[in-house]
Image (spheres, rainbow, N blue to C red):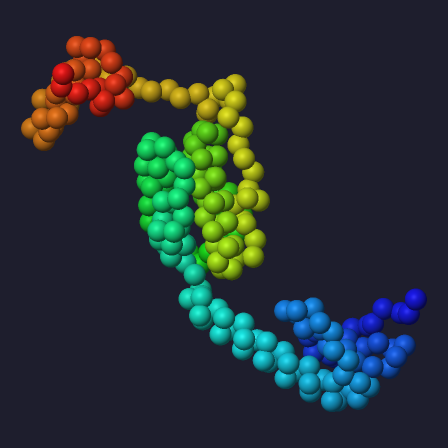
Length: 223
């Protein structure tokens, strides 16, 4: 077996020298194809330099055609238009994810997706979600956004997928929801407020009389 071709700091990128055969070879990073350039060092360096320049221009042209740099605001808009409508979400999940997409666009939309890494996203998730369940729901949506970005070649790595999921165990105090209850005086203060709409007053009265939950009150219809 022959010796592995050697590289040198003096050679352009993608150019290697094979000392056993006394020849230079250039590897196209896009296709992986290797081309023999002969043993003339100066000529090989000149050819490799020109090839690298052409590839660099091609990448820049491709980035420009894709609208790079791509912001998270653009990704959210494209995802909302092209992906979300085809998701098999129920009505509640669809509304919740529409809300979350709006938050992501508002808080992170100015950021370039290619430079938004897992460390930043992990910190953002920790600040955004108090329970493990909410943390994982936000994380799942971010992962799906990056899957779409990968399909459009806007990124090379799914950074949110590299963040850790949180445990949803109720043994963890933060995962046990505590819903503060309204005092009766607070209830009537809201009900009787001048800006409280009529539909809300009716719903509040119904909930007090029937003791039904919010969902059941919202689903009530006239007989």
